[in-house]
Image (cartoon, rainbow, N blue to C red; front, side, top):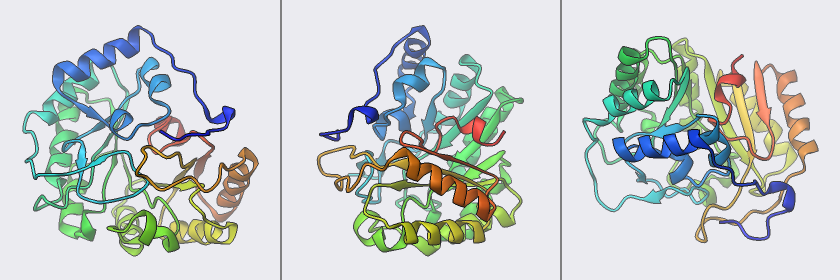
Length: 281
């Protein structure tokens, strides 16, 4: 975890019966969460309120993003055929009215895991017809056929994170491509879905670069945006260059709204799926 964190960035650990229920269900159904695997600072708060972001396709990633807490994959393991139904059961047991499903990037799979995203969406729909479903997807290497597989499952919202400015991709996201991510967002928008993205501050970006990024995201069709503070999740991750003041987050929120985003969450603890349902209200 990040050392020398300012006091205002430390969160108090809390537990209640709901958080215990979630942990029991996750263990019983053998379900992964990005909350745990990516070392999210909001995990205790979210679990206590019955919020959890499910992570399908395992908890190991084929990319080497140096900001992420998810461990790298060592061997290719096929998707668990029971997972879509298990997640649908968990959604029902927790009476979730809004659910976010994400995954590590699985470039080792022929379709990048697109069919599994679709199967999970369809399973949730069968057991929980009134639940809204947000998919936070990887880039599928820009493959339009794989994206169409996801679109055909008809989730309510599709999100794909840009993560950072283009000049930092070589050091922060060396296995990913900035333009591919913009193209994915445009394809999501062109197919009629509410389109959402997110990025981090504190990695060494400048104000000018962030404003350019905001314009690029808006031009790609992105409608909803989450901006959060990067916090180092492990000793091998890139260091935090700056703990950004809340006033700066607020400034980017104002700029983004003036550019035309429908809504923006911006602040130290905001993450892609944190209070996700409220972002779209």
